[in-house]
Image 1 (tube, rainbow, N blue to C red):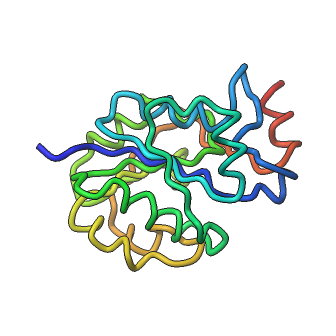
Image 2 (image 1 turned 120 degrees about the horizontal axis):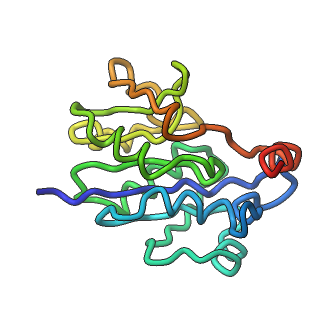
Length: 183
């Protein structure tokens, strides 16, 4: 059986947030740690860093995750995905989460993973979000990823898995977003 990889995308500059939002604290730990917790139990986990790589390494407990620094992070999510998937080469499936979605749960990851097919993604009241699971042969197309679309262009026909009962897809883009979820 092929390894199951987990990939946390955490390379952005956090411009709207005003700094490294990966380190913004929520419930006593940085946002990136919440994302890593959702992937606990997978065979291998990689976290892709970029703009604030040194700060995130120093300020968060990344555990056993393999740290991948994406030099081309400013190109967009496509560059981060290529870097992270290269680090997880050989995995038969990869579960992708975002560092700024702290309420994505391990239960949502498991539900999406249990759905057969080349790809599946969580939806919340019908709106697509993360986690996303990608399997072969779709993983083999990672080299085609460009810009900020990620796998979106390849997910037509992917299974959509309702996860509203297991997780909350809200992301933290601004300091106001963080204050709202802290209430």
